Amino acid sequence: MNKVVRDAREAMERANLRDGMTVVLGGFGLCGIPENLILALRDSGVKDLTCVSNNAGVDDGGLGLLLQTRQIRKMISSYVGENDTFEKQFLSGELEVELVPQGTFAERIRAGGAGIGGFYTPTGVGTVVAEGKETRVIGGREYVLEMPIKGDLALVKAWRGDHGGNLVYRASTRNFNPMVATAGEVTLAEVEELVPTGSIDPEVVVTPGIFIDGIFQGTYGPKRIEKRTNRPKSSARA
Image (tube, rainbow, N blue to C red; front, side):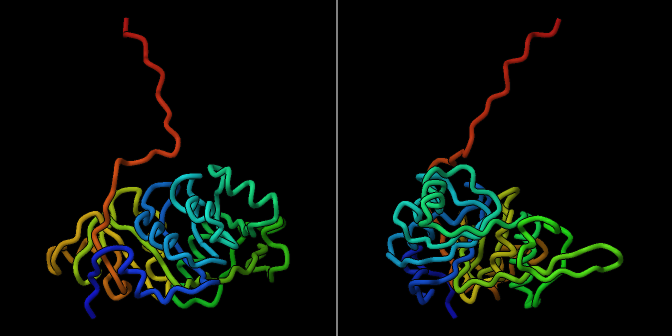
């Protein structure tokens, strides 16, 4: 299978897009998000999506673009505090939200990719997180059963990838991308640098190409910063 496609629009042709899909996305805030693929998903017009992502982007970036067009029906996330559109749709009842503790969120995606049927965790016991879920005592401690997350489509971004779909991530852009890459029936990857197969040392590959169904080199503007803060100017040393 030739995994290299021209751009995000062509990649989406491999995704069997349809209303009501579950889409799992890498990224943390605006760091390591598959921004070209998100734009292509928006332009496709597909709707009633369940989107699984640690964050919901910002009003004019990331998944915030899909919220603007009301293509998302449900969000499964850990942190959503930077998006006014998200807040308004949630409070009005337009958007269904499932909040998941961040570690549990990562493990549910990993379990989905690994074919694990579920796992017990102490996180959330005694809180609303555990409501309606099975609990049991193991070794004298109470645990709650969490179910895996698997997507119809997974979208990831990597720093470098080769024509075989092998991926390498850079610094904090790695975040949730490696787990997400394993958790889709179809996984599409955008990279900052696309190189011929064999150009990447196998020892540094994080996501093996067997998980990737389509890959392309994205186009990127200036790096956006979710919240810019500046350290106060320190006084000169005496």
